[in-house]
Image (cartoon, rainbow, N blue to C red; front, side, top):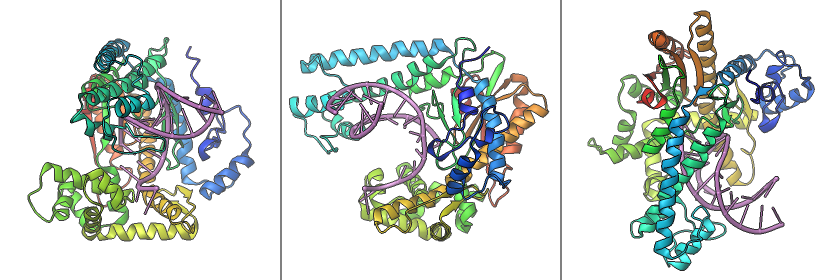
Length: 459
DNA sequence: CGAGGAGCGA
DNA sequence: ACGTCGCTCCTCGA
């Protein structure tokens, strides 16, 4: 049978890394867990005495751990042939760029994957003007190369090269390596408390950052598919969940109304930011950046880098955002104040985490802590909603004796694999459960897609 | 083996 | 100093 996953390792060991702990597996494991040690960690991190408490978050996490174990064992089928074909294409592309660069420059020993060698080639041999510095030299990052590419063909090539190598190394080869020869499936490892925010993480391989959006990346997603031809994927995505959470937690009337009336929130924000009714596509996209940025406590400087505007202009945008949605500012102030007072931030579901530094005398440390305090209740609540949904979905699948299986979780997205005959029922179940985890001012709407592979189901 | 630069996702 | 949370690649130097 399936043996060599690190299932045992992962689920049944008290992994005390990154502040997380494995006490949830106490009943399922043969390991002896040092509950005293675990309790020390938990109480300092979460302000919970886990030995004597039946805290709802502990309850949730223990249920989630069972679901994750099932998902890991279940695995995800990946069609090897598609990946192998892509591997060929990418390898060829990389080779042809390498040979072109070497004829153009007369250098055949330059490793394009080495930033150091690349700097020498571009800035010392070809005398291209460098744009910005790093700690150790001149930057050759994507931003720089994109600008340089306008005048220098070679930079365009290097960007393509880098993209292709990234996909080849991090995804295509890496994924192929993890296909279990016996099950033909990839059995990733989830960590319920992988992120300090209550989000999960996935590793070996990480299935939560599969690329999307270009031809090659699409090909990767196409390789993820049900193992049987009469099965399909059903993919459910929370739409704009973080913004909805912010709207509900802050109770901002304007934001709630906009979403309730099914208006385009980014467009509405844009109208105020740019003080006009007629909004271009680019302006809407900028407003979207502002909407998201504010949730993370973005600064005018940071925003200016993303939008290509001056910090002064961006300061105005941020001001106008808060003018438009005044309760969000009050909410953020409130959160920061409360966090400072009690020493931890808390989500709707009662998940807590210590945040240090709000009273630090160093303003940089203080600002950092402030951003963390602002963002965490949002990101955490989102994570909690997903976790509740996962538990309920798996329970319903099992009680209804469906063959459908939950196979992936990507932060705000759940992927289910099921026989074609169950698609309709699964879709209904997903709507019923996911949209009713919380009953707030705004429905937590999901979008459901189906298809014969991950790419199709996402469209 | 670790640091640093880079880049993928939400 | 300048948006949060992750994982992994590659090179390079100890």
